[in-house]
Image (cartoon, rainbow, N blue to C red; front, side, top):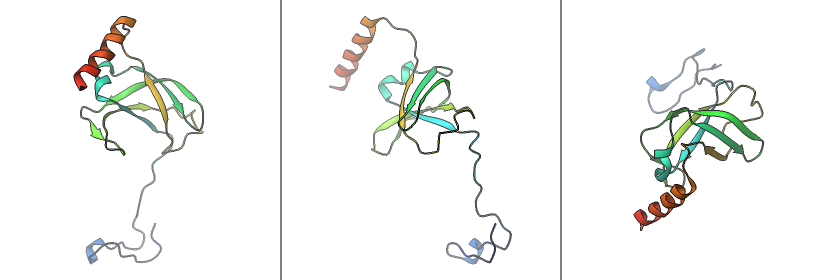
Amino acid sequence: MVSSWVRIGGGFSDALKLGQMIAEVASLDAMQLEIEVPPEQISQVFLGGGVTARIDSTKTLTGLSVAKLHPRAEPNEEGIYAFEALAHLTPESGSLKPGMRGHATIDGNYRPLAWCIWELFWQQVRRW
């Protein structure tokens, strides 16, 4: 809440009045894990797929699943295009804070080892 009259921005229409809310802080009970999926692997990711995440500064999270998959790739901080998959975190993971980084593995469909090697080779040929 604002305790005195504050002016933000250019005109008087941007001014806040006494008692007006400035910002709303989200609850930490409903956090999401954002996973960047490379474009060459997006065909193997599906909703409900199991997720195992290793957060750099804490522990390994298991038992998560893909809850949402964005249909369009967008550039990340390095400018590399990636799809975003979201997994909901449980309230039991209380040691997690917004902005923490880590690595995640999304379980896809089972494929034989020969298929995996061929797919890796094929992706390299396509990019060449």
